[in-house]
Length: 293
Image 1 (tube, rainbow, N blue to C red):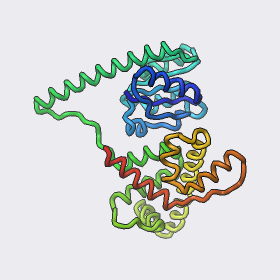
Image 2 (cartoon, rainbow, N blue to C red; image 1 turned 90 degrees about the vertical axis):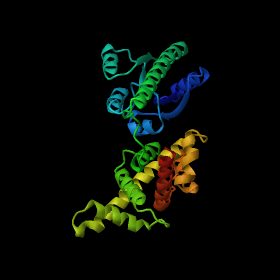
Image 3 (cartoon, one colour; image 1 turned 30 degrees about the vertical axis):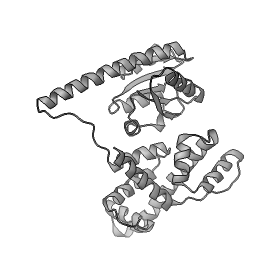
Image 4 (cartoon, one colour; image 1 turned 135 degrees about the vertical axis):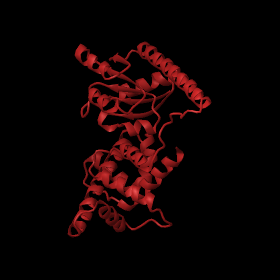
């Protein structure tokens, strides 16, 4: 099974990962420190079976996150918290969670609950496989998961980079769609990209230059937020998979190091944003994700 852990305490995340791996229960495919950092696209792209989520988090708590996810996420949800309020626990179960684990973490309790959830998932998948086989025999349409499109892959990457809530994210998705629909031998100039996405949105001709400038500023702010997120990950753990995978791919690594020094020492080093490099990497990575299926 594939697990995703959401908890603002890194110690709890590490304990849960250790329990899952030592118990041979599956693989932890992702972490987040707050509910605001995940969405259904993210979980879908990583094929998450089980989501373990803390109730109390600083930006978006477990209840609000589960409420946002449940219309789209088809996996199992387990909530974890030291809060023992019957009202909150009842609300969590009403939203569709499978189990509620009380902190401090008890290894035997976690193992027992995850094994039960795994058994239920295996049973449900077996039943689904039987149904699909019968449907094939009866020449009926088999329900399949929708294929990924370039926008879904873009949303996943924005979420991974910690910039999904930035206003420039919409501009980046529009650029991604334009590049995919008009792919050529050479990557178009940045000004042409901005001009094309603004034209596509329509509006008075006199405001085009103004909107292009505004879109450029939104994108730079969003990219700067991603740089801040990646640099923070690198400071916390230099071997972090996201840091290793994205730092040099989306940014000039010297600028990442500058941002890390800013965060660590409080120096004003003003790392530079290479917008074109970021957009090129964003497109190529999203396209690769889509082709991988």
